[in-house]
Image (cartoon, rainbow, N blue to C red; front, side, top):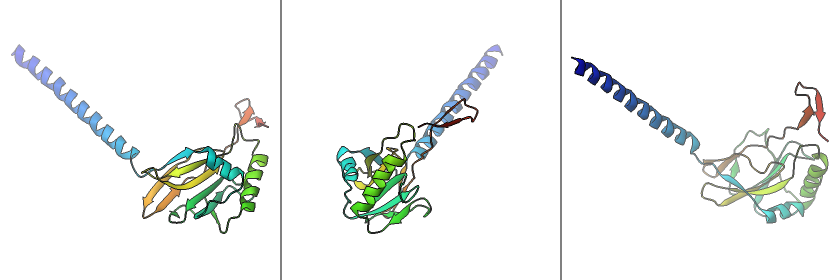
Amino acid sequence: MITMKKLNYHNKRTLEGVFSLLGAVLMLIMLAGCAGGNYGKMVWDRELNNTFETYQVLPEHLYYITGGYNAPAAILAIRKDFQLDNDPALWVPVPDVSPDHIKRWVDNLSRNFDFWKDVQFSASYILDPEGKRVGAWYSGKRTTTVKFLGDNRIKVFPPDMKPAFEGDGKGRGSIRR
């Protein structure tokens, strides 16, 4: 009888261990599924940065801005064979972009956004999940989330450009200058 009790206890512990392991494996599978998807990536590029800072227009690209027309928080250029699939309030299309547009935006960004903490505006290529270039990004934030929705539709999240505050941590402070 004593052996049966030990065997039952041992079997119960083994069964608990198996279920715990199975639960952990299922959670890993679910997390891997959430992490997957058709996400692109951003790759900073010195030449592209120079393209923006010398006010050149990328051929065969459609331009969008977010955060204000004269001094946007980001400039987005998407290849013409892709369609931006965002809420229209997030990105404003700018038809017939000229070097004058880009000059105004880039010059105003550097002049008007000097109060953002540690902001250095730079350019990155937007790559699809296979690593092909599908667009360009110029902003104080080097990266953002880019999702490919199929049928050459792309969703690009605008940058989070919150100002840095100095102060006592209780809401009393000022924007750093």
